[in-house]
Image 1 (cartoon, rainbow, N blue to C red):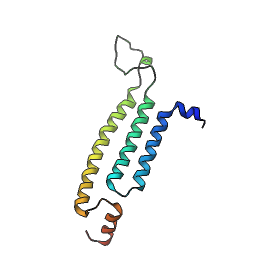
Image 2: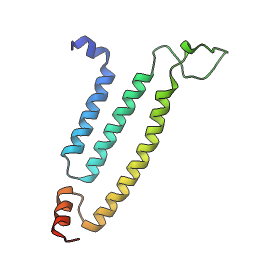
Image 3: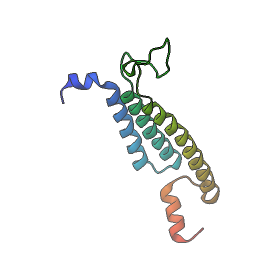
Image 4: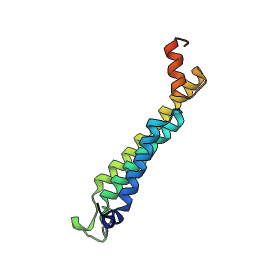
Length: 125
């Protein structure tokens, strides 16, 4: 891939880098809060990518103004709807994950996944 092609798609490259950071964080961190942050990075990068792919330069939001009904004047509303729905679901999932993390902390007094797994395997619940 040549550098000029990447320069023209820098926002997509940023989205992929953010996804990689989130995925690496999700895999390598032992702290549950940091894992949740990594998952949120991944979600956000996907929403950024969808928004970038749904936008067409020079077109407007699909709201009929001044009687313009031509499809070529507006962007596709489906990616925007998917992003909005995804954000709502992501916030809900994050809230549930954080509440379960609080429950785990109250029970095991740690947020380290390795320590929680060790406690469970020893049968010290």
